[in-house]
Length: 168
Image (cartoon, rainbow, N blue to C red; front, side, top):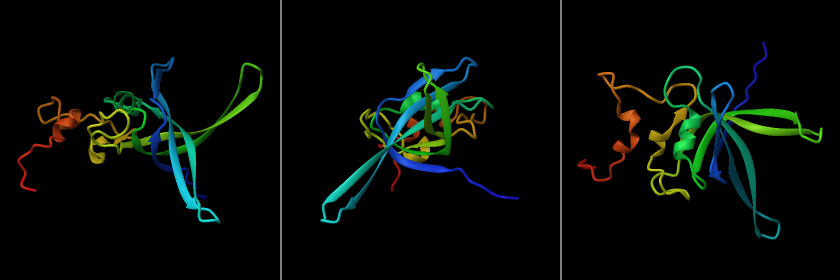
């Protein structure tokens, strides 16, 4: 049996606010572009930089209840935010209105972690630390408290208070 792996991990910044839409089947999908850059020194010692743009697609999880990736992206992610995106590469082709075959390469996100933190990114309203902002399409984000009501996971900003009384 042959084994294979299609896995992508990117850390980059959003170039513009995400586009979120509903499908005819009732699903929700978020599309956004993520920029990654690399720098190196050229032969003459001059600094070079190249930016790559990646098309990211984040779907809501159709199984289970709770908030999906598309909903979280729509609510919390803004232009300039730094994100960790994990997923797989997919290639698509289609016919445009002129009959030309067009191709695109997309990263289908399975996990997104917001890295901007408080005041990060252009939106400045992130308010989340990376550990509390992770959302995976494999598991629902919403978890109920002991009594079946909303838990801390429903209000992550409640855990972000900077004026706590901890001695460390």
